[in-house]
Length: 334
Image (cartoon, rainbow, N blue to C red; front, side, top):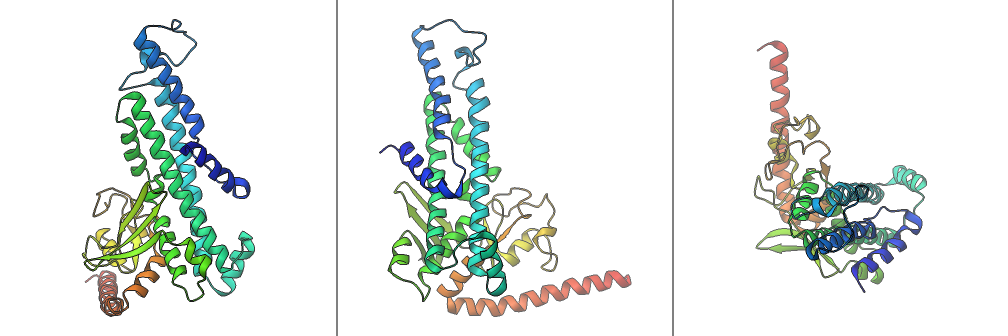
């Protein structure tokens, strides 16, 4: 079965009740099909003369630019990618809030969202969300490859880089990392059962020479590997936080990279502060605390986690003390 048909069937099944946005593969392929016909008619010198009312003029469609393809293809794809990642982030955040909450707050979420709070329902929704993210990422990759094939260019790959810088690449979402950790946490939960185990075969926490990483394999055509080593302290991330560029750091390390105190937090970071790894600006506002990942690492590395927790407490107390002392000195004019 061709991917386009498989994709449409999957989305139809998912969208019956949830009304999830999708990548319009059929519409985008029609745009590229017109462009291909223009290329073919121009190369053999046949076909009707250019019509002034026809915006898709083959004389303007070349390897480097295509007024119609670039004017309709990329804006449409960008809009659809933004809607997909926005919907995914919202639903993943809601699911994880439900899983981590307790007591009256959990009751309020259940009442508001009208979803089941039982274990199997959480497992299934988590699986569906990860599948939704992966299959849409494949759809984007395939349509961009088709664009480059027709235009004999690398414009599609350039657009992919642009989408990453705009944070509309779904595989870049911090909530995908959280969902992977969520899936593993549920699998390792004492209340696990055979059905839950069957749904979680694709996600693992692995250690390579003591360095942890999250890995997920789906559809045999895409594999996610998320390194869980902080590039600042070069240790396993502790109290992990994901910046909007997708890079993960320890919370204390991220605060140092943003030149802010622990008391002020990452939201106080200047918009010109850059990610320590990719050097992208404005990535601290909207940073996400990865609570499910924090739980997973604390379970998987108990000895390390206990030692790190003790040193972290000492460091946080020291930094907080320095912050308040500097404020007091400033207040009295010393």
